[in-house]
Image (cartoon, rainbow, N blue to C red; front, side, top):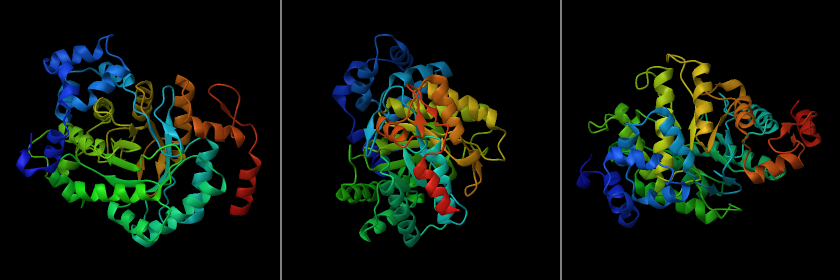
Length: 399
């Protein structure tokens, strides 16, 4: 789709293609590939084996001739498991990113949102903050604060400040307690250049994070965000449709063995996805393509206030993605990000999805929730009827 000679993402896709993994499906047309994916003979192990032989263009092509139920059913069969301080992506599990953003990066405000999320069982995927003031000293300050909370309460989770990858590298060089390295990525070299990155800087960042050896149960240290329309908005799409560009971003992510990847499906606005119906479809497409390519895919089920969408549309997409085996969703106070000014999913929404479909948090995090008496009961646990003592004390201190 983009010439090999002029695009490093194309070179990555071609050079890393696994011909042996591709062999079982190489004779199929796109239509036959759809039928094969949906067949009862194809299970999670089969899909994991062929995944290195599937290119993003193949995944995008087959998704275009699939109904929503097809995208859900096949994605459900894809099981991608990653680990850092807990294990994400196991069957019948749904994790959440606790997103305690604050418009002035006020540490008390951030801490209040973190506490709120933990008391609803959110935060096993990551406690991840988009800084309002994006510079290295601020990154160091916030990541140090998050690390103190995690260490104080011995929470089996990881933190991340969603800053530019070069800021995180500098923070690591200054001795900051960095768990995960974040970066937004796209599906062409030109689009990634517009983000100020290339494959080499991502490799440098991963190496720096691995050198800290902060994981306890695994070493997946990267966190990537994507979203349909980013290449088009940068005029770096080379005439491709935005879904194929999006799928190519997953090839970039796949190369760096991330802990987390998510599409911020409705954030870019109606310039690229007009209404709730298109956002729902795009979210299912993104999740399907990423899982087929072997990524630990989550979704920021969201929309901007100038889109023809509302929270009912988000309820629909959340429910469909949870049924499809989505690795994680966002948890934000009241569904409303007061720093980024968009609408997403709340702590309550994640509880709804878990209760509806019998889903649970990451096992290490769930054990911690029970030890801290935040969860009680068997199976899909209920919230405790009383505020746990350690957190009651924290509230007194914050007050």
